[in-house]
Length: 490
Image 1: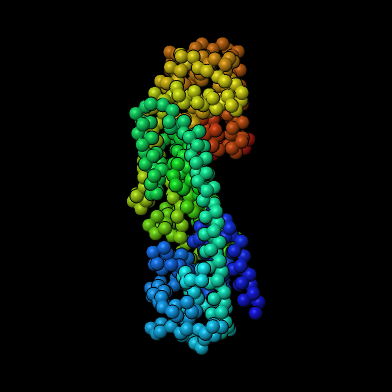
Image 2: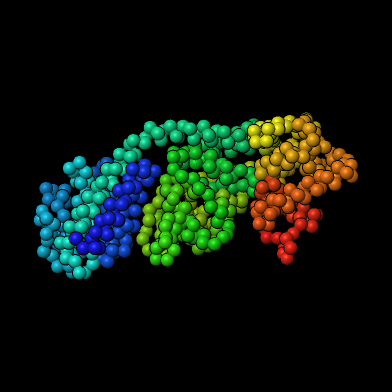
């Protein structure tokens, strides 16, 4: 055995270590095998064809661009010789190998090498390659190695099936527990009786039952990210990963989303689309997708396949995409390709009937975090119910956190409510010394948030539950800024 053959077998056998991981589907395992073989001097095109439950040949993995019609025609032979390794020739009958895989076929006539995949003593499919070891190796040597690799495919298939079967009961238990976890967070969209919330509940249930892409439309702070995770955890995909990615900017967005090929010189590896295979990937600020990224996503939505950055091999993936966008939606070409389930997340001003229940829940959460249980007077609650909440639930969360620090008593009255929230006639008089103390406290709170987020206004505003307009007002009001900066990034 030469060094190339030894290294090839070693890489292939290492893939067996991945098989007991029930979180990996068989297709992902087979793709990892091709990743291990990629770069062999004689290998350009390959495919793994397995027989499905209805006795039909199904392509489960591919490398390069093999002639699919040519390959599938070779799987039609189900006679007594079907499980013998062979060489496929263009427009000619295949040549069968002997028991030791010996075969006398010139390399220029060998279009593809085929080795049977056997499970429990029966034929379960085929491994097809156009070569492995390069022009210096004989066809017999290539075919012998192909047969060994077909045995690895069979072992991967068997181990993956065993791992999946063993994890079935655990998967059901995890699904049950996750659904209970989801209910803990569902208060944002279940506590209340407004007509807008009733409509949202129906849209959420419909989205959880669907496998189509998801489009979450609404204003900032309405809870679209929380709702995306909730829909994922209430769906059959709950056992698979959930991840989110802000696509509004940043370096190496394509690499983070699609992964990179080793040819880039950075080591390569999967992106979030592959890492969440079978699960859900939330694309935040999807209306800001760069055109080239939108085009690649359109291709994925149409075909279920994509290529890594710098790579040429098409990879299959079953990740459900969720798009978080403002009410105006996403790019027309992306929306047309998605055929998405659309969920409209209402702003708080359209569900005022839910504000009391939301405050009660948020105050309970804050009590668990700080140990301080606040309650609202009826006058304070009425003032909060008529406020428009431009920052929506995020602004409400920020105000509750602020009250836990600034409210002098556990009973929150209208005098404790930030004055910008109150209508003009509801604002109580503030003594000069009180006003100075509150201004200093607010100034320090805004300054701390800006410093934590590198002076990015949008992120600091999100933490404080403010809109960009509101935090911009406070920055100007208190003269905040970093030394040497002309302006603060938004």
